[in-house]
Length: 102
Image (cartoon, rainbow, N blue to C red; front, side, top):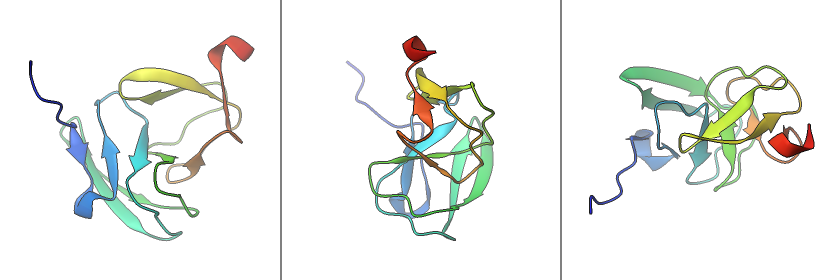
């Protein structure tokens, strides 16, 4: 069995992305508004300015996500956006719905 290895860990271990299809990252530690993080997604470095405080263990958008678009974490659809979500914004229950609730 191959050991689990995340696709990318942001600078200083601030967040994790598992799959190059992900459009959200998980904060490993609390990220304060204005923090700048970098992640390599599919060979491309993404520089993201955090728009609001992200508690450790919560998610934030890697890219702008339109209303109704799938939210992808670990290469799987975890929900759909209830609103437009800007790059660096918190992704949580206030802006995520289950695909079955549409």
